[in-house]
Image (cartoon, rainbow over all chains, first blue to last red; front, side):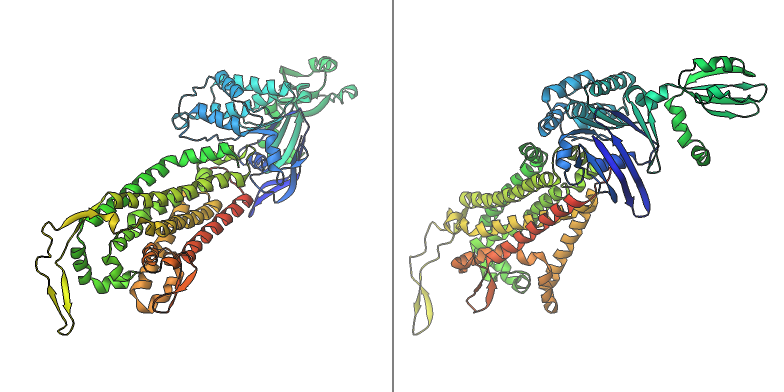
Length: 296
Length: 324
C-alpha cells in the first residue's frame, strides 16, 4: 500500500530525510517513532506531495506521490500534527466542507464521529481550544472512508477519555482492513494499536520492530552475588542478549520462557524481576544509549 | 472547477468584498453630488489660479476639468477609489498561498483530493470577480450620483457680436428672471463616458491582484507579501510623480504602472475622440500618435493575467513547509 525507496529530502546542508526505504503492506498498522526532528513529519509530507524529494520515490497503492498526488489523496485520509482549520467557520460547517470535498467523505459519518468524540459543533473554530480543534481534525480524518489513514500525532492535546476513544476508533479502522500509519510520541498507544513500529533517528530508519515478536520477548533483571555462569548450550537460541556489571545483570529472551526458568532459578542472584520487553526499552536503545552500543 | 471550493473562497472574501463595494458605490455617488454643489464658474476660477501646477500633474487638458464630465471623471482617480481597489487586490492576493500557509489551514485543505491549481484558481476567480464588482460599483455609484444630482445653471442675457466694431452687446430684457435654475447633472453628463474609466479601474485591480498572488505563491508569510507589494505600490507612485514633476525625468513614465491607469484620459477620449476610445493607438487632433484605451486596459489585464499565471506555476511546483 505504502512504499518509499531511498527517499531523501535535503534543505541546503541539512539532511531531513536520508534514504528512507519503507514498505507498509495493505491492512497493516504501522507506528512511526522518533524524537522531534527525526524526519517523521518530513516523510509524511513527502508522501502527501507537499514536499518534493531530493531523491528517491514514494508511492501509495502503486501511484507516485508526486506525479499522481490527486489520485493518492483520494485513497488516503490525513491528520496533520498541528490541526489548524478555518477560524471563521463553525465546527459543523467545517465538517460539512471536508465531507463534501472528499469523495470518501460523509456528512452523517462526520457528525457521528464528532458526537463520539464529544465535540461541540456549534462553536466557531476560532473560539475552540487546542484539544477541541484536534477533535475536529480527528472527526474529519476519521470520517473519511479511505483505505489508508496517515495520522501525525493523533492524540496530542486530548484528555485520557477521548484519547482512549481515538485509540479505539483507530483499532476499529485497522480491523476493517484499512492501512494505518501513525506517528506518535506515546509509545503505549503504538503498542496498543500497531503491529509494527519503525524507529527513526536523524532522518533514517534505525529499527523496524514487529510488535507481535516483541511481545514474546522478556527482560530479566536482578542483583548479582557472583558473576553469571555460562549460558547453557540448549538455551542459546532463547537467550539473545546478556549484559552484566559486578552488581547487576540483564538478560533478554526471545520466545517461550519455560525452558529457561530452571536455569534462571539457580542463578547466583537476588531481586529477580521478569518483565515483557516493551517498546520503551527498544526505543531507548536507539535514543538514549551510546551510538556505539546501539551499533554493537 | 470545484464548486465547494469556489463557495468556500467566496465565503472567506465576502465581507471585504461587500464592504469595498458599498464604500466605493457611496463614495462615487457622493463625489458626483459634490461636483454638482460646486458652481462651475467658481471651480474654473480656482483652477485658473493653479493652472500651471494643474497642467504639470494632470494627464488631461485643463479645459477638460472645466466641464462636468471632466470633473465627474476625476472620481476614478480619487485616492480613496484607487486605495479601495488596491486594498482588495492586496488583501485577497496575499491570502492566496502565504496567508493559508502561515495560518496552517493549507495543509488540511491540500491533503484532500484538491489539486494546488484548483485551490489557487478558485481563489483567483473570486479575487478577479471582486475587482470587477468594485469597478462596476464605482460606475454605478457615479451613475446614481449623476442621475440624482441637480446643478445650478446660470442663464446669462443674450449677447450679440457687432462684426465691424468687433464688440459684444447685451440684448435688453433677455436676462432670465428666475435664474439660476436647477437642472439635472445628467443633462450635462452621459455616464456611458465613464465605462472605459471603470474598465481601467477593474484592470488596475486585476494587475495588483495578480502581482500579489505571484508574490504570495512563493512566500510563507502573508505580512511579507503585503510589505513587498505595498513597497512596490509606493515606489510606483513616486516614479509617477517624479516623471510628471521633473522635465528631464519624463522617461520614468515607462517604468510605472500608473502610466496605464488613466481613467481621466479615457473619459476625455470619450468626449473628444468617441470613435477612438477602444483602439490600441490613434492620431489626435495635433497629429500625434496617442495610446488608445485598448492599450491601457489590455496592458494592465495582460500583466495581471501573466502574474496570476506565474503565481499558479510557482505554487504548483514549490515545497510547502509545515506551518510555523
